[in-house]
Length: 394
Figure (cartoon, one colour):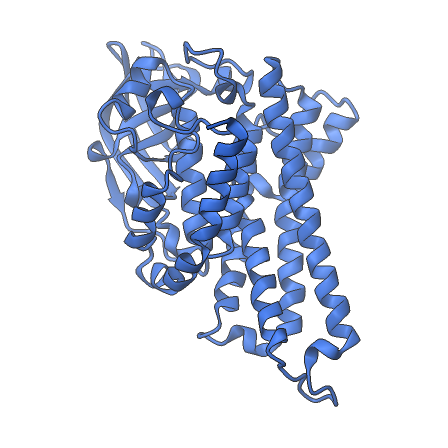
């Protein structure tokens, strides 16, 4: 199968699951974990291994493919789409490690899944050929369905001084999951807290963040385009594919309701769809969603393009991706806000899926990596060639 055919099949496969995800969305939220039926189907259709190296049983597809797949899944269930996106970005990160580490994860189980918390959440001390880590890592999306975890950690020398920032690859059976994810939205992601107590991590399972930010990865397979993708741009862009999907799902639900001839309360309109105010609001919401999609696909194509070129993505382009991803989050949220106005107060009935979509969107779009104000400052400084930045995560 050609690359284009493979991508098309993955995206179409995701679209075919939307109905199932919608049927299971309420249960996913109530159980605070993705419905097991969803997990099984996603695994069977290969949607958890989009970014796993092909030589280890994965699809090794493009960044654009991953974003389009998660946008499709987001139409059905925000929590399922988010979990799929985060598991896949972990698959990509594992592809950055040395082959030895990659085979430890996928050698016996090509479908092995991982979760991640990249913010340094603990302490470490040097040990023979590795580090011993202890700490707490909150917001580990997908941890209930993972066999491995990627944990941000300081890397220390023999004298206790910090020498680097790293990402430690740790088996889940060496960690404890603390039930801490009680939220208004994205409840089904099971983004609980991971605990480690004196866990040894060998050096080959610690990825240098300092090197990764420069585009320097430990993988020996330097000819694999996907694993040359820019670190932070990819990590940030995967967060908004599901958000675009949520907005699209909201539009579809509102359009279906209008097509059924719903009246407009307290007006002479027997059908709300006949009102010019409804028509203009629906058009504006659709345009905002289209705008979000255009920015997301530009970001994806930028990441894929620079990876294919074999050159490190320049700072200004990386900053623009941060801006693009923030724009996707903001425009998707704005579109959904308009759609709620069209649908009215009934949107917030517990039986109406729009209220869950709204809560998921409001929660997901507040992720720190997609903060519009921060992204604007990062991008503005890059455009103006101001050397001092406000974050290394560009």
